[in-house]
Image 1 (cartoon, rainbow, N blue to C red):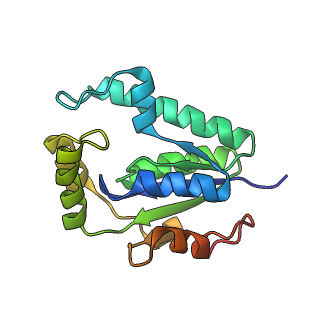
Image 2 (image 1 turned 90 degrees about the vertical axis):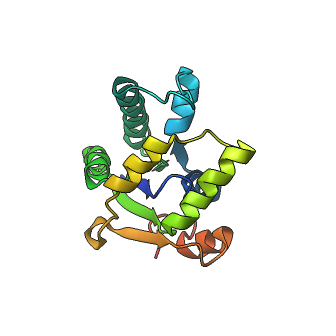
Length: 177
């Protein structure tokens, strides 16, 4: 039985995880799991008040369930959460291991100053949901960049996204560099 892949995105809010996830979904024909979309489906996100810890837990449980379902069907999947701690990434690795899937962590390694600039610009454009000040600070304060033992693929923005994807993710399964 061929193995499936779980791609775990990692990065600051507004690093470009959702954009990258949608591009990889299209390029590789994989499934995408988005906590933002799950929150929208549940109708619980509020830019002003955020969400309770219990609501976040329920959202993550649903994301994990969807990821496990895709992997159990031998379908490649990308998780576009921030995955800003090793513990979060280890939890996803455990799910992948239970379904005999390979894991690749994609670290969107942009400067914090650029993530902050995009975040503040979004407050003017409202292109996507806001991230409250305290939530942004929480991610920044607790951010643990992935280590090499996590099979990291880095995107630093030095190449246009489409070019980087074509180079890094050949369409033949298992051949990414």
